[in-house]
Image 1: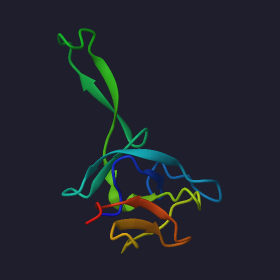
Image 2 (image 1 turned 90 degrees about the vertical axis):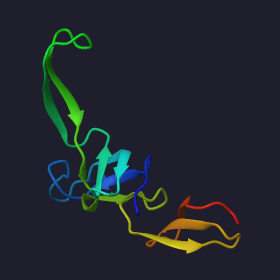
Image 3 (image 1 turned 90 degrees about the horizontal axis):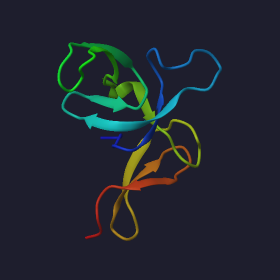
Length: 115
């Protein structure tokens, strides 16, 4: 899986992706749902949920919550390139599996511990 919780991602498709030559929107991943192939991204795909009055919410009304979007609509952002990039995996010199940027070859994060 190319995207992990806490990653900074670039929205490349959907309502929240900007059109034309302007810069695309970037946000943080809150939750990853690998079986559904979806991610929950902070401030992206916000929908209104209508709730009845209850003890927890005595007023009732509408709540704005983030809905999941498809994993194919986001790209991880490389801190060195500062844009959405493709991600590869490799074993480092110390035997640790790492994710790296395929554009500039920078290490994004460690995936497994040293053996």
